Image (cartoon, rainbow, N blue to C red; front, side):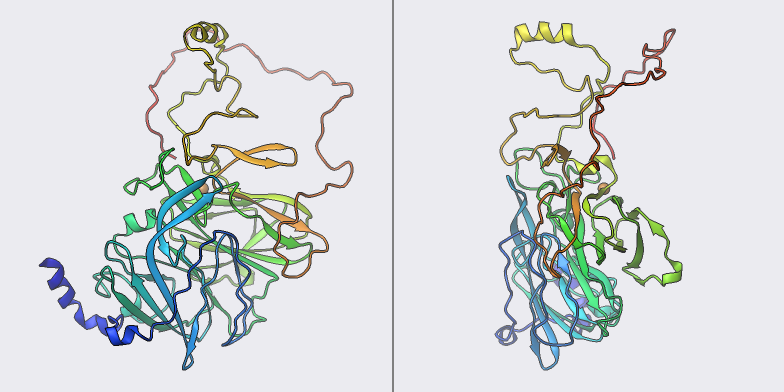
Length: 454
Ligand SMILES: [Cu+2]
């Protein structure tokens, strides 16, 4: 009853986001579906104003239909199965077959019409984060429009007024729907393609999930204690490398729809924040960085010249965010000598393994994992296990790549004598740090491990 009244009371705003009639539905544009989590080739615009398309990391861009000068898109909100990395699938919610949904690319000044069909078991809406548009198109369920009921299609229509970096996500049962992966990237390209032009333009969103090892569906009431930290709903080693030819100008745009901030860090280069979801930063107001914090609900477009050949780490600098799901209720055992204890336990429990007494490195150790669970720290590199997971990938800068070649060029071939190596010569004496624990009346504050907070 309540819902019904609510629906009627917001009837006036439906002029904006109006319910499409059965007759109208017949003219809905096709809703393309993506079944792969691979990085799709950039979508070269087949019509409309020209622009330099972006590359969505482990994602794709949504094709449109041009109708009487209006770009028509069709998003379908629905349950999807997303591969987070080879060996792990997740039951998420997304758009058009994937989570996140497809990137929407338009040009400044374009009139855009977006049909949204709800195939979820509950209401939804779509908020066009960062866009300057009529209030009734802002997608806030209950405030600016009636919610889109399951099975219904709504239409949004507005002019993309400003070039820039945006995203879309539900503004209805947000906690649940974003924890299930409902989000997508939006790029409005400048009317003049020479403006803000770069050679490669990568985009992706940050999202996080709480999926218990051995299960498939995220827990959605988690506030902070997520265990899978993703670039575009992928975790390392499932995230593709970003590739650039030596000397090219590269832009990487990142939007954060997790519940915490992420200091995004690039090795081997200095960059500038050239834009946010509020617009472009004037060149005189930019400063050099190698890490930029992306707060919740923020977007950052960083730009740099890829002038340093190699395989460069690109990751969130919170060390817990470059790991995959693990049990965190583990005390710190560094420096504890358990050799005697281990022998005794081994008599009772054959195969008992001591962990953590020499640090947390897993080296080449392989534990048996529950089904549908990734190793905590993984990724085979040319020099061994990278011991990374989560929000980590590489920027591969190479000489002589073809323009627009986004294929993984393999591992960097380092010039002779430029790799850190074992020293086999004479080792000069170095003063040693005191190796004995501090003596005396040291009170140990032993705390029973409980849940953790990042
Ligand atoms: Cu992070």
